[in-house]
Amino acid sequence: MKHCIIADLHVVIDSDDKPLLDVLAPRYAPFCHRASDCAEVPVLFALHHVERFEPLANATQMADFECQDTWCVYEQSEKGVQITLQDLTTRQDIAQMQCDASFSDAKCWLTGDAVQREYCYSNFLMMLFAFAAMRHQTLLFHASVIAREGKAYLFLAKSGTGKSTHSTLWLKHVPGCQLVNDDNPVVGVRDGKVIVYGSPWSGKTNCYRNVSFEVGGFVRINRAPECSIQRQSPVSAFALLLPSCSGVKWDKKLYRAQCDTTAAVVSRSAIYELYCTPYREAAVTCSIGVGAWDGVSSGDGFAVNEKSLKPAGVTLPQEP
Image (cartoon, rainbow, N blue to C red; front, side, top):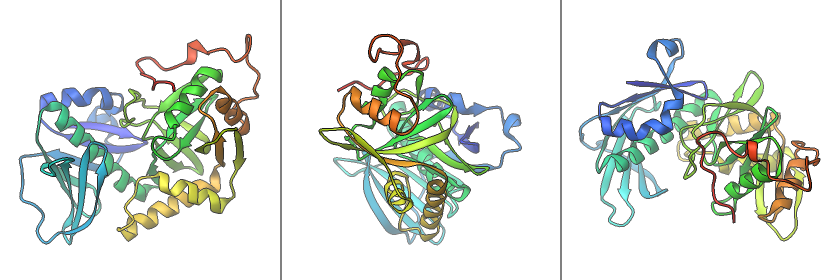
């Protein structure tokens, strides 16, 4: 078993498939600990990799949706939850997970080579984390995150709008920045503060960092011919944040926990809406607008900050 601490929560990876574990390692190694070192942290959930098992009896399909490169079918019964990943083209089952109603104990079977098994296993871990963590004032966001001078800023947007592009602009044109996560950071309310954590899930960007920062602000990005930024009212802020965190609307208890935590985040955070181009001026407007930077750059103009472009081992997304 591998024991991981992600956003102060204890996750157990249980598999004896060495090729699978080798492929998982780059993502999860920064979060792994000796069992004895995290024994005092209660286990959020454990995911056991086992042989193929019988489908859940009398399960009702609650939803189906595209999940990155697969089709996901979510089913529920009195005994728990079943999530099946299928081939997008053939709709053949390629992996399946069953878990109890609290998402604390789960098992899964996987098919394909080590890369495909890692993809499915990691997706199951991410789903379990998103669902189980909601009861601990913790949400998995779809966002790109930049940190500067001890505060982190989360960029939210519809897929393809340019979250990664905006992060790259900050890294190039705002001194002293670092990339925290480029797709699925974790946000938690801890001791009255809103904290964002790196995670083992960062989309196509190699950025799996076990770090945390107090949140300086959330920014919803919209494309526009000119740049402007405005802080949102609590009602508008709630409407902006809720769609950007992972959840299941058909599970009333989980959805209530998701809404409650979102409301707690809104009451403790600054939320902005940014209209911008995909160019340098967007990073300047945004960083000044959220109070992350005073706009004063060293050297001539807005020079590239080479030393703080990225942490060691992180692959940045391409610029437009």
